[in-house]
Length: 209
Image (cartoon, helix red, strand yellow):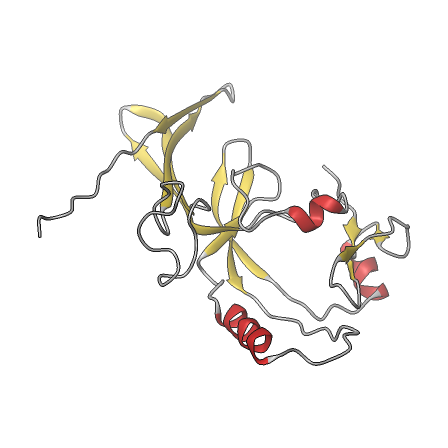
């Protein structure tokens, strides 16, 4: 796993990510050198709510701040574009999204297309909407203790606001569906890992009209 720090630039017209891979310009040995080169005006706080087997930390977004960067457009955004930006900034991130930068915790939300195009996938973590929690359960008849974790992710099959993603779409995907994984693991004295995944089943009952 790489331990250096990278600074990503934003194209002034398209907003696309730019990365030259030049040491001393956008690649630094540590974060302190990067901050000294370019004063950070963006801050993201997180908290570890889950540690997966293997020591992979799952972090929950606790505080987020939007940065406004003026692009070299010929004109100002129209009313629709301005309204869309306001709606995006009002979308709640804190406490409702999580990520893991050392382990794939599945479907990307949103799409990783912009960073994939520039070969920057390793630098931008996949942020998922949902909850990640873990709890250690001491069991008198079982040593060491059991670890119980739950991961819930908002499905990307038919995601959207409640007014645009209700019912089933053309592919049969339910609106704003959530996926849930319940994991239980323990570590033996020899550091051997035993992990169990419980499939969760449920159904929706529609009463007769």
